[in-house]
Length: 125
Image (cartoon, rainbow, N blue to C red; front, side):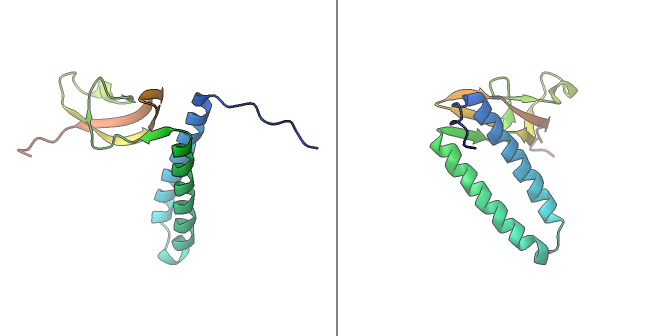
């Protein structure tokens, strides 16, 4: 049975799909690192191909997936920090890990990212 064409997806749904693929890709990369080289080579190739496909599709849709890792964290950054409350308000923080990338289109945030932060290292350390 042939079904009718799918309804057009809204930007938030597409953004969520991209974020879920991004998270799956990152988790797969970590799992591949634990495999012996002989077993991981094919999986690395498949994952690299899928990552390129995602990048191409995201570009065609006019979206950008933004990973703020190692950036200074501040109120204007288009992401929320799950652990920002662990530090004093005046602390200089950097993004230590991206949990979910920010999705943007035409300089507009479609989906806010999620990160973990840590204190910035001073030059004295």
